[in-house]
Length: 122
View 1: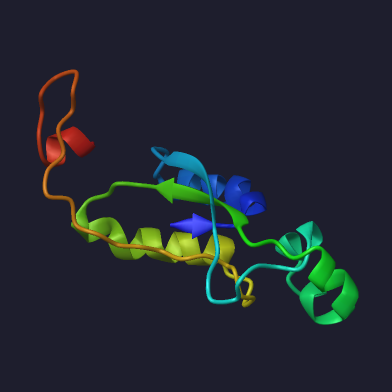
View 2: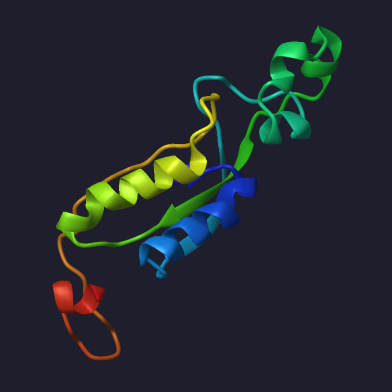
């Protein structure tokens, strides 16, 4: 999933509260169909895009938006709950709330023990 940087603490807490403490977080940059945002403050409060003057918005437009990429591996029967946790922690209704990518894993191997499959995830 990709989310706004300032949403990481709330998302981590939501995962912990739901019983999912294992998580990987990476700093990434990218852009969606909006093509960037109007200044650093608009990342935190997207409503600012609507009220910023044209001159200010054009002068501070980012080509790449800093985000956080969070990776969590769960069992198939936990996917729906995890997606709900992510949405509840991040949904504001504004462009840029994030994206969730649900993909199957072909195999998981725990390096330390050699365990595979479900045993390597737990």
